[in-house]
Length: 492
Image 1 (spheres, rainbow, N blue to C red):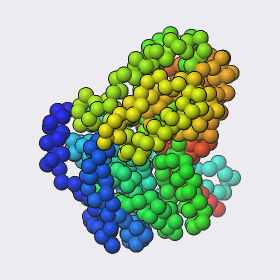
Image 2: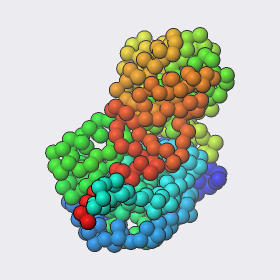
Image 3: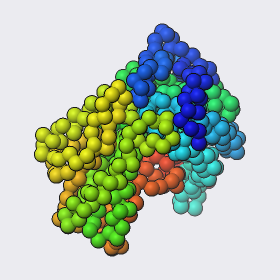
Image 4: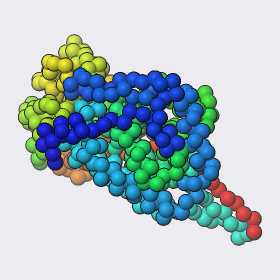
């Protein structure tokens, strides 16, 4: 990987594309409006991005609909669609350095993480669905003798993918992969805080060979461009990752218009349960720190509630404090950086306000907090003496704040873990195989990890219970979101 100076040199050489990508071409918003995007590590403006609104969305949706009805994409052979998706993935790989740089500049995440994880993960997502698209079969129903009934899956139409700022390109490709593989037209709406890699995909889509209108990028503010997509009568599906509040609003928008499908991966307040019988507490502590502080804690499935059995709590917290030291904030373009900045100073203040609230509610700050300066740095915070009734234990902070909660026994741990409006992820650390199965079965979460935190790959679905959302990203299950299931009944 490049040195810090080489990344800075690449930044100086890179001309930022700031326009929307509509019908195969880059273009300004119709009214030439823009909004500013800022590097959270420096506080300095990066660029002025096209601020698309209703009229721009109308044009993009019209092109998406025309492309879908013309069949230039959905009617291509599976082998042809596969080849184009694979080229798309290969182009992401060949532009690896630039995309990693853009991701780090836009979000403040460590360049080492963007380079080693985000960009390869995005390409791998597209490749996986390229390989999967011709392996999804229909079914023949077991009917009476003189009937042939078969079940088929066809693309849903125009899909709007509204994605967040914490893993902008990677999460976009979780959605682009199955939606495009299924034969849909897709409009990508990135967060206004992280538009650069989404915009960059436009030129790569053209090089890959997508027909015009099949892949487009609408940049803009959520309450303008995002809501325009959510309320548009010619959009058939919204796939979203973000806050629970916005997920609910998207469902309202759908209900008030055309009942478009809304698939939402929303918030989390995930329980990481450590039992005293676990044989390697150093490993559990290292993963407890990583599970909460990776990506500055800006992870929907971050392990933000650490539930520790009473008999080992003090010993285990000491281990977690030690493990957290490797997440010292520093310049994201330094390849040794393991923790960058939060997305902006407004979010930094929100996180720090939660730390203050925790103290007011009776929690103790063991380590971490504000890092003075213009950048949006917050050092990893560990809060002790937290009860599950406190707001900091119930509300998603979306920052590097770990809440330590003690429990008496297995039943108590399960009760505390499930006492949440969310149900995205959970983990169990135990050396008792029966206990692992018992507890995992009872946890109300879409993903449960045993003796690890947040492992997985494209073969397994990802999504949540309760107010953490609906539908699933990743795996073959994701095709369900982007296809309609049709029954054809033939009387012989």
